[in-house]
Length: 74
Image (cartoon, rainbow, N blue to C red; front, side, top):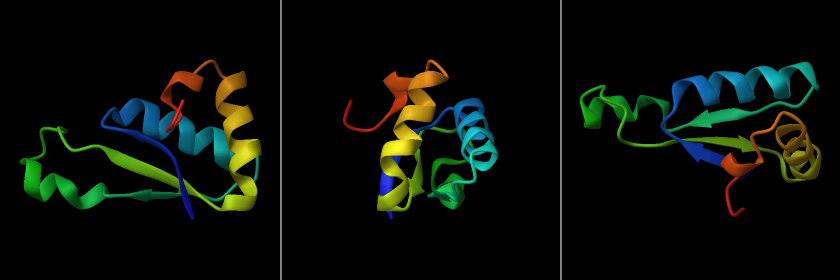
C-alpha cells in the first residue's frame, strides 16, 4: 500500500474514505490510534493508504472532488 494523503483533519479523512468507498477503492487509515500519544487533540496526522494499482484513480477522484491539495507529494 502507498500513502495517498496525510492529515489530522478528521473531516477530510471521512470525506476521502467515503469518496474511495463509493468508487470501489479500498483504503486503510493508518495511525488512527495515535490519539493515545497525542492526548486525543489531533496533532499527529493520520495516513490514508491505497493499493499502488489504485493510486492514479484515487488521485483523480480527490482532484475531481476539489481536494487535490491534500494529496501527499503534491
